[in-house]
Length: 375
Image 1 (cartoon, rainbow, N blue to C red):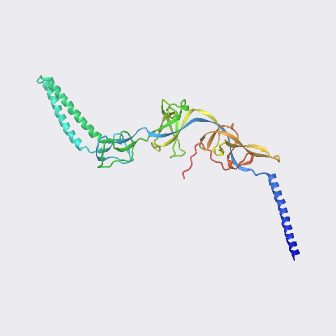
Image 2 (image 1 turned 90 degrees about the vertical axis):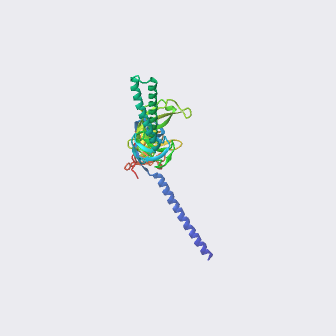
Image 3 (image 1 turned 180 degrees about the vertical axis):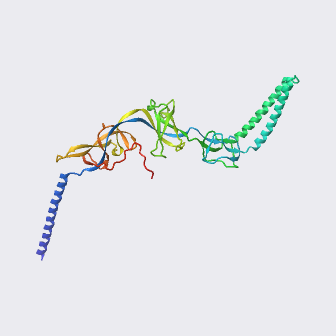
C-alpha cells in the first residue's frame, strides 16, 4: 500500500515539474520575442517651432483708481430733509443729492436781506445828499460801510444754506446712500460715494532696473480676474520722478478708457507695459513643455533608423530657456533655432529616445488670445 502511495506522489511531482519546465521555456521565449520587437511607438501630436519677433513687455501689478471719485460728506450739521437720488443711479455735476433742514437759516436770510435792502436805500439817499453838499463825506462813508456789512451778512447766510445741500461735483454713478430722511448728521458725516467710471487710472510700480524703459506715452495692457482672457489697453500718463528709497521701485500711472464700466476702482490688476522694440524668440505650444527644477525641456522629433534598417521617428529631449507666455503659446529664448518639429501633446508618456507616431487629427489649442467658452 505504501508503495502505491509513493508511486502516486512521485508521478504527481514529476508531472508538476514537467509542466513548470514547459511553462518556463514558453515565458522565456515570449520575453525574448517581445524584447526583439521593442516597445511600440507612442502616439503624439506635433508642431513646428516657429521663429518670431514678439514685443518686449515689463510685467507689474497694480490697483485701479478713479480719475474722478469722492465720498461726499456733510459740511454742516443738521437734520436730513430730502434725499433726491437713488443708490446706484447716474448723477450729473451740480445735481443736488441731499438737502438738510434750513428753516432757521432761511429765516435769518430773510432778515439779512431786509437789512441789506434798507442799507441800499440809505446809500442811495446819502449819495444824493452828498451830490447837493447836504451831508458830510463821513456820513456817506458810514452808509456805504453799513451796506457792505449787510451784503456780507446776507452772502454768509446764503453760503450756509448752500452748504446744507450735498451736490454731485462731477458726472458719475452714486453709491449706496448712508443717510436717511429725518436723521441728524454732524459735519463730516459720509453721505454717499460718487465715482466716474468712464476713465480709470492704474497705479503700479516697476523695479529700478526699468527706469530707462519707463516713459510717458507707452502702451499698457491690463487684465483682471473678473474678466479672464479679456485685455484692456491704456497709455502711461505719469512717471514718478524719484525712486522710492525703501522699495527701490518707480511708480507709474496709466489711463484706461472704461466706457462699458466693466472695471471698478479698487480692483487688483496685472499690467504689461509694451516697449517699442521687438525680441527674437521661437514660438512653441505651451502644452508641449515639460517643467522640471533642473531645467525645462521639449521633445524634438527626429528621424532615425532601427535595427531592421527601416526609418522611424524618435523623440529626443532638448533643454530650453523659456520666456513669457501668450495664450496657448510660449516663447523659447534659447535651445531651439526654429523649424524643428516638437511634440505638442503626449509628452507625459515619453522617455528619451522613445519611438513616436505623429497623429495630428486632433490638435491642442495654440491660440495667442484664446477665448474659452462660458460654462
